[in-house]
Image (cartoon, rainbow, N blue to C red; front, side, top):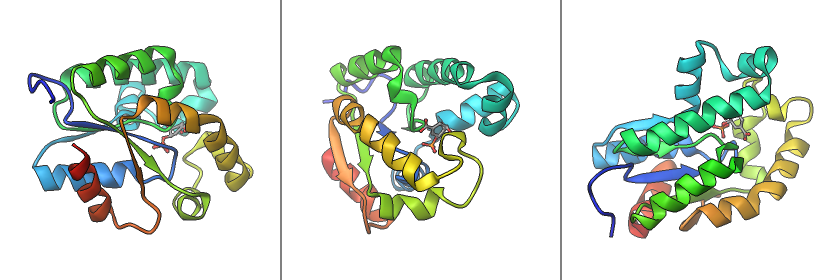
Length: 175
Ligand code: S3P
């Protein structure tokens, strides 16, 4: 029921460590479509890694850049789009995703448990919001955001124990 004229084939949302980037690439390969990632867009615009944007300019500035990246990607990109884990917190982004869905777009929430997310997020310093105690911070963040992920998404895929290609197959089934 997608109107076919424009916009991403699918938008992936979910917490850090849910595999959004990996699954986006699996879908891109499967469908021979381009992959876009708002974290990468923001880093390109700012000319520095996200961790540095947080330190130098603060989270509100990062969120503003992120919102802009989401808004543009929803218009310009016709492949697979992965959003940064916190992008859905922005009210404008929630509205933009609601409009995208009204036009037939599909938003997929990649759900994941702490046990499966932790190995992916725990071992580097690239996610400022998880610094200190990554497990506890991830859990708090997921608890607060779960209702938002569920609200903005049209489909939820529980990814625990699945390979990226399995998740991609489930996303395809849901379209
Ligand atoms: C964030 C998630 C990160 C990145 C930034 C903030 C968040 O993206 O946008 O560190 O608020 O959850 P990933 O979900 O790709 O880790």
